Image (cartoon, rainbow over all chains, first blue to last red):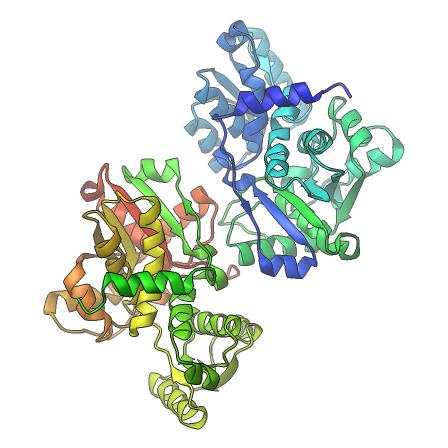
Length: 313
Length: 313
């Protein structure tokens, strides 16, 4: 494993004080529903509303003084753009965020509110990458990938570490898998801080590239990704996939209606707001109840940045 | 004051272990919006989802052995029915809950789920009272009023006590006012555990009976109560009104759109689910910003039992 416990210890120190130590919530109603003990790590309460704050903070803080002076750039229509914007602001670094023209104005406003410089482009991946590359060339800013970056992965890992620190005897740790940065990080957390803790990814059937990648042994992509879990449409990367291959025991796939039902259960029983993507692991637990019966399960609730005016139920 | 610190100390001991010590959350975004330090006591995370669990638990636990054996009865279309049902179940007491026929089936299911015996009646207050009285006569059950009952008031007070225990230097404590049971209890908490802490009620203009009652010196009623804050449509009672008169410095009224806006801010920024009624105090803080500038404010988020399929925004 390329990333050691020392790397992880360093990341824990790096983000300490710069990100929230989020609470862990439980619900007797949801435990009863699952037939298991479920510990929800509430990254929806993280700064800017998602675990991505951890990876962005670790990655920016690990830049050299010269790199920090030149700024950072990313392209994102989702949480990572906000995370880079806020983490950069907190560390006195200039952030350039490339966003598709058709990104919801509420997301553009959030990124702008955190003080980042937004450049709009067409909504294709090609246009985003070219626009980012141009900004890199012109400013010398360092490009930060949302999930395929070792410092981002290590930063993400700190959520699982905090959870295992509080509940060291978890049998399972479940997280959603999109680009793979949270899954890889959480797998490292379990390897170095768990006690035989199995890490499982939750993924929509409608975007099951990670499931298929583990089966085939190479990074697969999604021909389409028509899922309510809009944070999980992306593919694995060459840095996180080997970690996932080595350390993740299983990917459980769930149907769209299972995601929406799990999201509603968490909203109604726990009284907290989570994104659809974030409901996927609990949907997986409900889908495979027998597997998890009487077990201690940690779930990282990855984020809460949902448009409350436009809910999937 | 008829209720002493000894009464309150006893209530704290009585509910200890039977209700959750709910967390206190803060949000830098909402602090910035308010220009103040706001500490939100999350009774939306309380058992059954509302502070009413505290009053119901204290009232039932204070019954004699004989009274407990005969059961308890209440009429409610809202949170108090659920609170009595669950508190009674936890204490091994039979609960009879009178509910209007047209109460949402989700509420009936919740009360039934907690093991209470439901009797349906017409939706008028007269029908509810008559049905309750009949059950009292037939079973010997003790009637519990949702807000005009000293043990309920003392139980409710424990939320404010916990908040002041954690943050003893609060300048203000704000709660919504409907039947007055939470406001009276919180006023007692501030009297005995605060340090010059002013208690203020928040109330919709559309159901401002408490405001008018404090003005006129007698209990006023609402000719109509067409407010989104459906938990605040009820009137004060002869047991809680004198406490409120003596201890509450002010009632701030807010418009309907201010309630909905405050609710949205809390949902979006804090990622927690609260009822519309529960948003009224924060709406009051935003309405009277100058008054609260730079102050330390405690707000009791009274409950989170909202129908997520039917939101006011």
